Image (cartoon, rainbow, N blue to C red):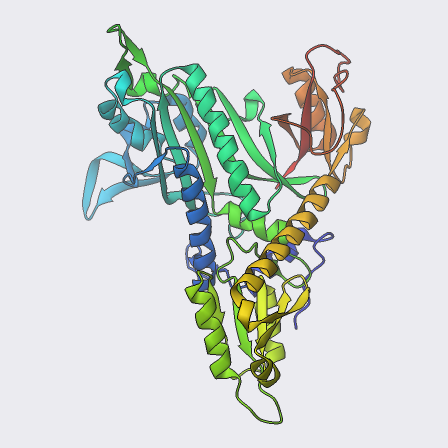
Length: 474
């Protein structure tokens, strides 16, 4: 049994080892940062996609898929946007042996691919709102150290793009996205912080950006998603306008909501432990593994194990029968390191008694009768998720602390919360003190009890301060 690095002391080393042990991806592909999705990792990704699709479609969003290549002429229309991505794009300049008249960008994100078509789709106020999403691969020339799921060059990406009648309705869509993500995160047992980024750190072309962040230890944070309000910043250069009931032409207000495979990395980071990955039941590739355990006294429990598997599969659970010739102990370790929520052990004794012995990924054990198998397994999975979530929420709260002075930010080992007046000058002083980033202002209640914000931690002004957070983005 390989020993993983200590998660608290060496997070990145632990993370890389846990991902490799679980065989979620293969990073040996000959293009750096473009990794292979292995069967087990792909199943986990597919579950994530389904959760995201279910929750966003419940808000009225509909699926689309746009091409991956974007003409330079369209990409250049929004100057602030292309400036923000200029150093990260891949260019296609030849088709076969022919040099292209118009170079093409390999999609880094899809505003400039979608919006010329939105201008054709939206003509009247009756065409609004337009809420669509796609799950596609995007490509960015990442120059920093690549890490599976967290920082890659080919990104599995969920993105919703919307057109709204006005700024108020666009703000309502941002709120709807925040509510939808809250439901997703609940299914992932994933506590997080919604933070409005400061103007100097918002998405290129956005009016404002709300990031979804998690702490990963030592004052470090990981952005796992973002929601952007564009106002008319894209609709004007792309000509997306509609005729209102009075016959006046108006530009739409737009929003986007983006999540990536980084979400899978976040689940590994939050729930994993010294034994490796731990998946919440809703997104685990398999929820249950059934393991026949032969006895030295004879008797083959495999037929009974197959019966158990059949009942669970027909009951709608994702179940795997591990009838390999390996020793039971080796199988237990194999599935624990891969984060499978519930293991059912079936030996001659269980076959005779018409029961199964259940063990969760967190070590809880129970005996479940065959007569109430499906209900018993569902109860065990529910208890496992509840405990996994409780552990995550406890660690989440412990990752934050109040700072009452700039001096307290120096060398901080927690993400710091503090009052900020909103001025860039004070914000940059905070970043210098923590040697990191002012993440922004909190959307909603702080993650720990704080009360009302007082005077700005930098300038001492007491008026218009808001709770803010600072850390060191991973």
